[in-house]
Image (cartoon, each protein chain N blue to C red):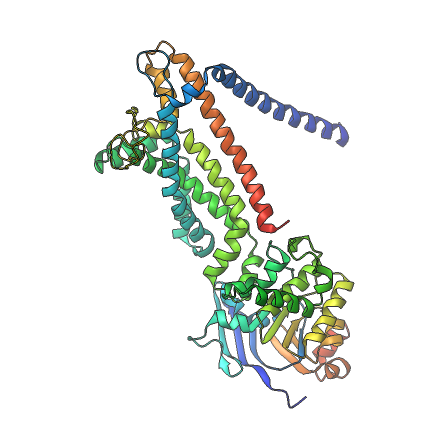
Length: 294
Length: 254
C-alpha cells in the first residue's frame, strides 16, 4: 500500500467512525423526541404530577430542576472560580498542590450515586437538613465542583504567560493582572464550561434521589415567602426534579399514562440540556468577540 | 554628554538561578535621555540583567539577586520598595508583541484605567499622544475600536510601546523588541526610539549589532554573565578596548 492509499484508507475509517457516532446520537435524540414531543403541551409543562390518575404534568418538577440548578451554581461557581484561580495563578509547584489536583481528579470521577449517598449520610442525616433542596444543591456542588474547578484552572492556564508579564510590566499588581487581564481573556472558556456544567447538573438524577428527595409537594406559586413550606423558594422542602421524576415513574409509576409522562419528561429534559449546550456555544463565541473587539 | 543625570546605577549585581550564577557582578549606570544597547551572544545574561531593572525576575522561582540597583537614588530592591510603582516608572516592551486581546484603544489606556483614570477626555488624549509617540497613530486612528490582534506584528509591537508610554514611565526597557519583526517594521521602531530618546531613558537588549550601532548612544557588551565592556557606541564598534568585544563585533563568534 503506498502512502496515498494509506491516507485514503485512514480518512475513510475516520469518516466511518464519525458517521457512526452521529447516527447513534441522531437516532437516540430522534427516538426520544419522537416519542415524547406529542405528549408535551402547555398543560403538561405547567400542571403538577398526579400519582394515580392519567393527565399529570411536570410543572413542579421542572421548576424544581431549575431552582436546584440555580442554587447549586450559586454555591459552586464562586468556590470553583476561587479554587481555579488559586491553582492556576498562585499555587506553588509542590506536593501539596499535586495532592489537591489529584484529589480534584478523583472527585470528578466519583460515580454520582456515590455522591448521592454521601450527601444522604452527611447533609440529610448528619446535618439534619432532611430531604431538601439545600441537601440536593450541596450534593450537586460536590458532584459539579471538581469539573468546574478544573475548567476554570484550564481556561486560565490557556492564557499565555506573556500576557501576565505584560500586565505586571505595566505596573499592575499580581491580583490586578489576574482580575483585569487573565480572567477577562479566559472568560469565554470559563462561561462555556459553566453552562456545560449546568447542563450536566440539570440532567443529574442519581445524586438527588437520596438528597433532594423523590417527592414534590404541591407548591403555591403565589407565595414567595422563602420560609413558608408551600413557597417555591423554600430551600428546606423536598424537591423531586425532572430527572428524578423520570427515574421514579419508570421504576414505580402506577399512573395509567406513566410511559407517556416519562417520554414527555425525557423530551423536555433533553431539549433543555440541548439548549444549555447551544447557549454555551453562542455565549462563549459572542463573549469572545465582544472581549476581543473583533 | 557628561552633564546628563544618571537615572539608574547598578553595582555588583549577581543573579543566581538556583546554584547557577547567571550574572557575575555587573556594574552599569544609565544616563537620562540616552539609548543604551546591551549586546552579547545568547545566554550571556543581557536579558536577565534587563529584567533585574524592573524586578521581572521576581516572577521566577528560585532566583537570588544580590548587589545594588538604584533608580534615581532609591534602592529598588529595598524591602519597602513598591514594585507596582517601580514598574510604572520602568516600563517594559517584550520580544514577542503581547497586546491584550482587546481593542487598540483599550490596550493603550489599560494602565491608566486601572490606575483610576476615568475622565474620557484624559483617556482620549493619552491614546492619541501615546499612539503618536509610538508612530502608529496615522495607521490606526480610524480603527481604534478594532481588536489589537487584527494588526500586523510590527503594528502590535508599536501599540505595546504606546501602552507603556501611556503610563508615563521614566525608563523604558526593551527586550529584543524587533527580533520577531520584518526589516521595515524594525526600522520604523528604531526611528521611533530615536524620537523618544529626548523624553525617556531607553535601555535596549538586541541581537542585531547594526541596530545597536545605528541607534544607541552607549553599548554594553555582555559575555557569560560578565560585563566585558561599556562605552560610547562609536568607541565600542570602531575601537573596542577588549579582545572579546572585538571578536564578537567582527563576527568571529557569537
